[in-house]
Image 1 (cartoon, helix red, strand yellow):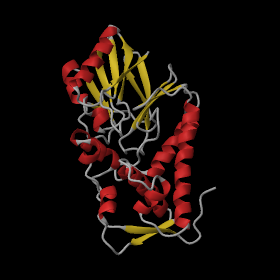
Image 2: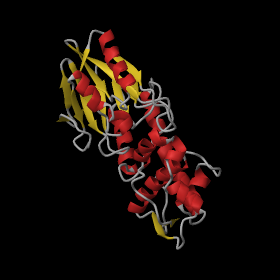
Image 3: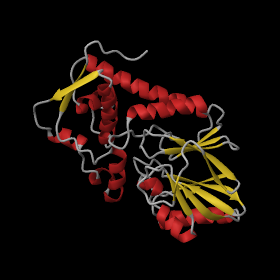
Image 4: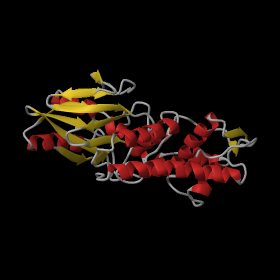
Length: 310
């Protein structure tokens, strides 16, 4: 049995809020996957959800370390005496590392732990074989697509993770994502995500085939010519694709030889508090990799003979 408890933290980055999941481990124990942000009302809702099924929270498992998923772990653990498990690369304080590429066995519950780099390098996905359920964190959402932003995320590892899910988890019948609704056709959703990233790369290559361009140029061409609150996230998506293409020798860059305009600076190094408010600014900063400042402007072009992969 899987119970969804959605945190009251809606925003442009979290959709309707972060999804936490409560699972029965047997013998009166419960596991929480992603306790969400440190909002006391939400943490109490998790405890109440477990108690409604005569369970007590004894284990906390993190898909990754972003604050909207892991921020409440310490408080929930203190209130319940639960153990926290996280990816070995996760900087969030935890009691034990997840056994990557093996089973995490907690009482009567066994979850296969899949190392799932891409959205972040400390990301794990869990497969509940009995329920044929994937818990995908921010790798796959129930609505829209996720942010892949350097330096904590990278496009090619993310695409390899998606392909692995397609290849190895065709039997899954449910995806429980970190945000959005439950997905009831996992194979179709994974295929949609794979196709989306390929489509975006094709758009970037097509735009550069028409001439050199900066990241702001590409954002306006591919996403929207009109100002958009999510322009900074869009710019970091473009950057992730460009870094992948550069590493493969398919795109080259050179300094633009001029300073950023005010509009370019606002897109590449935004004041996030003016976009999502001060409380959500740190979260959005984590999601878009704002610690990587883009203070110089590059112009990108296709390398000679560059084509899309077949």
